[in-house]
Amino acid sequence: MKYISLLLVLFLSALPSYAQSDIETVKETITQSEIEGHIYFLASDELKGRATGSAENKIAAQYLATMFRGYGVATAPKLNNSYMQPVALTKISTPTNTTFAIGTVSSSNLLPVTKKNIAYTGEMVFVNHGLETDYDKKDVNGKIIIAIAGSPEKTDPRSAFALLKKKRTLAKSKGAKGLIEIMDTDQNVWDNLSHYLNTDKLTIDDDEEEPFAHSWVRIATNTINTLFKDAKNLEGTFTIEGITKSTVQSQNVVGIVEGTDPKLKNEYIIYSAHYDHVGIGKAVDNDSIYNGARDNAVGSVTVLASAKNIAKYPTKRSALFILFTGEEKGLLGSQWYVEHPVLPLKQMVYCFNSDNGGYNDTTLATIIGLERTTAAQDIKDAATAFGLKAIDDPAPEQGLFDRSDNVHFAAKGIPAPTFSMGFTAFDEEITKYYHQVTDNPDTLDYEYLFKFFQSYVLASRKIANNPTTPFWVEGDKYFSAGTALYNK
Image 1 (cartoon, helix red, strand yellow):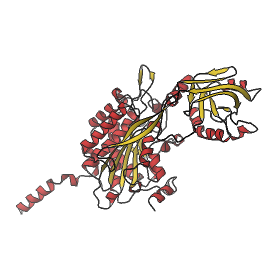
Image 2 (tube, rainbow, N blue to C red):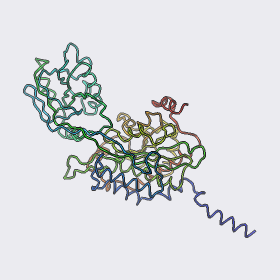
Image 3 (cartoon, rainbow, N blue to C red):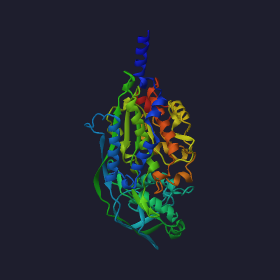
Image 4 (cartoon, rainbow, N blue to C red):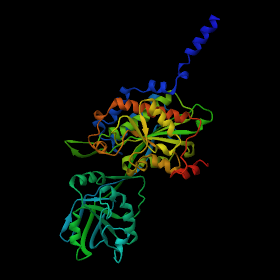
């Protein structure tokens, strides 16, 4: 009997990992010091803001790939035993010269919304805000249109951005040759807009064979109204010069861990984040490096934490880890991926994205789209286990669900929320760091991040081990795309 008891003790002691709970595996694999180390490297000045296509962006990608290799994450199919998925981009440069002149008004500080060279001298037509009714009884065919940015109700930059495509499409349909929008704003806002618009553009393909010239110019609205008070048509000049095109190579970082369940391993959970940021820009207090600690070194390291845990303790479903390039240039890496997947998209049953702008409440984890999928309870329970509360999007007016890499997967039908640091509003505490030189690793609360990372990894395990395959909540915007993808 003693001999049998000894054998039993030895047998059980040889299998400690199999007896571990998901919470215990999370606690074992995640340390605060490792989190700090990763973030301090990715958001260091030496990586110069990880701009897509830069040498520093490639260094960040290689670092992430090296972590995958060290954790035991396997390379994915179609990538020739590499963690790098090449992403081919077209670079469209900023212009070397911009001018606008009409009557007594002139400016050489235009912000091209679209990248098109133009040299126009001729008639310009004022169309108020450039909306449908503003074209009544106006002949704009072959002419340049001048419009006030935004709408009669809202002229702020965000509202103006929301109307850009609509106005451009309408102007083209009327036969206009180009569109100039008058932006009446202060210098600080204009500088921020310039940082966003007056940069080289990257695109997956130059989908606009004949781009339409569309620019913003900073002029007081009453100046334009006065200029056109007595005449709706005036002669003017509109010049954009020096825009060129070239090819840029970037890369997504991709790895895989096979699941343990004979049936469920054919289903994959995607764990994703973007690792690029906006690079070097306007200097503030002698600092021109936009380090991107929150956005999105934190998200990248969240995925690393999940990769380390699942590689050591595989889940029932398989795991696909993807770190995207080009998010800040228009969600390009994720767009490329869904068009060039390494595995069939119909096997991807969930995309657990992580992206961040900042945080203002360290008791929360904010999940954009939390209640839109059936995995909501797993995420809530995981956050609770580590002292946090999971909440849904508190700022729907920002349209955050459709502004991160998850949206490309959602559009294909794959349930895809975004796990973010806790915030209750997109307020000054967020904008203080969002796309600013202040977003440095030494401004983060690592005790909070420790809980945040643990919550994400535990949620990952719960979703991947749940016997029920996650899906959209019925009635969701992407529910029908999901039923089509999975033949439900």
